[in-house]
Length: 152
Image (cartoon, rainbow, N blue to C red):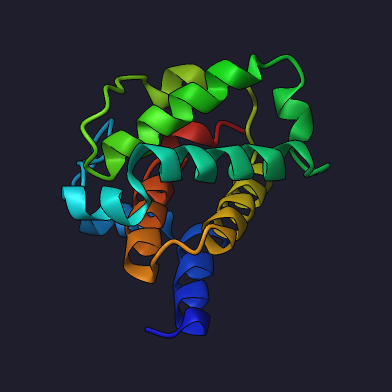
């Protein structure tokens, strides 16, 4: 799969709201199933996942479309939770049991905000040079969380 094809897949999955179709094809889980540990290693294990999340959160905080959602957020705690979440999703075995709906229910997250967040993650994945298959695996799992995050 070429980089352009991956971008089309990622954008169609996350930015065109095709997550509903993805959910129709896969079982609905409160926390998506974890990947094999091979994906986690492609992310660079814990150090690589930490670098990805640092870059992602930096992208989000610089993004005027959505940074106001994080104005009163404990950023170090957010980063730690996101590292554990990605580690868990990608097969690293890190503990993560936060309920996405509970966390986001009072935030008023719009579809446009979810899409902007997805763009920031795609940019971070590209900047960290994560292999395409590992990117698509994570993006599909994040897209499946859309109904639990978008509340407005």
